[in-house]
Each structure stands twice: as C-alpha cells, then as structure tokens.
Length: 140
Image 1: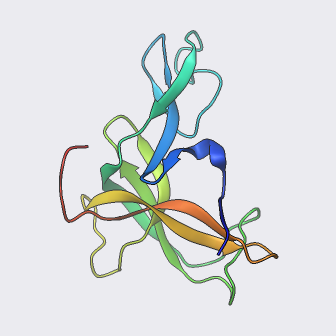
Image 2: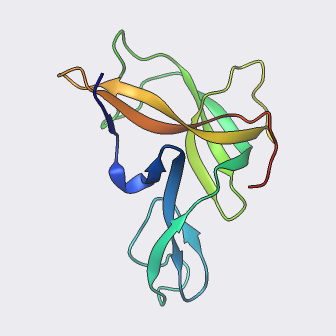
C-alpha cells in the first residue's frame, strides 16, 4: 500500500516518528507547527527544533462531529475520536489521542505515533500524528 504524510513540514522523521517545530534564537520560545517569526519577541531567527516524543495529556475532549474542511472523513464516514493538548515540556501540542476512553485522563503518559487520517481517491493512505498511551515512562 502506498502512503504519504498529511503535511511533510510537520515531521523531522517518520521512522521513528518525530515532530519538528521551531525555536527562537532570541528568546528561546518553541512553537509547533513551524513559523517564520517568533510570537513572543519578533526578534529572533526561527530555526527547526525537533520535539520530544513523550509527554502527558494536559487536556482532552471527544471530537464527536466532523470538523470543518480541510478535514476529510475516513471511508465509512466520521467516527468520533479523542483530541487534546499534550504537554511536551517545552510546549503544548494539539493532536489526536489514540487512547481508549477507559484509559484517557489528564496526566496520562503518552508517546508520539503515526496513524491513518484518510485515503486519497487513488487509495493512498494519508498518515498523520497522534499520541498513544506510553506504558514505558522514559525520558522526554
């Protein structure tokens, strides 16, 4: 099966998955996704910064209805999924939470993973990032 990333600019690598944001050379602010200017000081140069793969659920909710475009539902239509903020230490990242309802909670240790988002018309599987439970609470 052919796969592609939902947005190449979000990733430093796929195997293993790593997200890339940006860090300001002036004040040290870290952002995700990348941007060209610092939202805090507007002075520094924004350079690529690979983010930690482990974090903790900071807040979460159930996405029970289809989001607005550019969201594309999977085959068979929208299925509710968890979404939330994950505290990676340097910043909070919003993303899917591939966590069963019985396990999800604020403070849950999670780890970055790749998950299918949808399939293109030609059958290509489009991958995005999500966070799964991390039963091995190692270093961030």
